[in-house]
Length: 325
Ligand SMILES: Cc1cc2nc3c(=O)[nH]c(=O)nc-3n(C[C@H](O)[C@H](O)[C@H](O)COP(=O)(O)O)c2cc1C
Image (tube, rainbow, N blue to C red; front, side, top):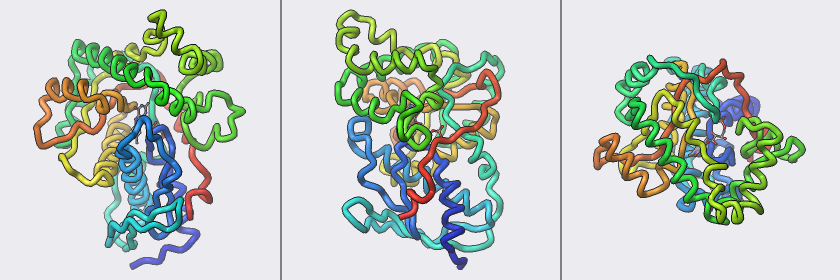
C-alpha cells in the first residue's frame, strides 16, 4: 500500500478535475474518498441526479488515470454514502497500491475537451469510427449521412422541448458565463470560449434564452435561432453510448470518460447531446435506429468528427484548493 501525502493528493486532484461534468458544474470533491458537494446540482436538466453521478464516475476515472501516470492504482474501493456535513457526503473510499501497467488513455486526459463547433467534412472517417465502436460492446456508431441528418433534426427538437421550460432556461443561463467579467468565468460552468461563441453571439444567447424567449417563441423563430442541427449534421458519426440496465452510475461515468478519451486517441473530437438520451421519445427512436438491445440503457449520445483545425486544449476548472475538503 502506498501513502497518499497531501502534496501527492493535490497533484492527483489537479489531473482528476480535467474529467468532464454535466454543464461543467464539477460536483466532485476529494479527501481520502470521493466526496459529493451536494450544493452543486443542475436539478432541472438533471432531475434524477443521474448526470451528477455520471460526472462523479468520470472524476473517479480521472483520479484512477492520474494515479496510473505515477505507477499507482485505486484499490479496495468501498461505497459508503457517509454524510460529512450538510454540504458534503463521502460516496466511496479507496486506498492506493503500487505497481500497475501504463494505461494508454492516461496521456489523452490533458488533450480531451468538448468540441461544440462544426466538424470538417472528412468522408473516410465513418470506417475509422466504426472500428473504434467494434472494439467496445457499449458503443454503437451511426455513420449513414441520411441517418445523421435525421438525428440532427431530432436533437434540435429534443433540446427545444427542454428549452421551452422556463426553469430549464433559467438554470442553463445560471451556468453560462457569457461575459469574461463573470467572477467564475475561468473556473466552472459554460463560458464563451467553451461554447465557441463570440461576444455578439453570447449577447444574443443571453436575450434569446432570457427575456426575449417567449415573444420569439410566439413568433415561431426561437427554435431556428437556437438550432444546432448544422453542427450535428456535420459529424462523421453519431455515437450511442449504452451501458447495462441497472449499472452503478459511478461505473457508467468511468466508462463515459474512457470512451471520450478513446475518441480523442483515434484523432476525433466529440460533444455529448444529452437532450437526445434524456427525451424518452427520441431515446426510443435512437434505440430502434441503433438496434440497442433490451438489456442496455442508452445513456448518452455523442456527435463525433474531425475539428476544422487542431484543437488547443483548454480546461476551465475550480482551483485544486476548493476541490480538497
Ligand atoms: C453527464 C454529462 C452530460 C453532458 N451533456 C452535455 C450536453 O448535452 N451538451 C454539451 O454540449 N455538453 C455536455 N456535456 C459536456 C460538458 O458540458 C463538459 O464536459 C464540461 O463543460 C467540461 O468541458 P470539457 O469537456 O471541454 O472539459 C456533458 C458532460 C457530462 C459528464
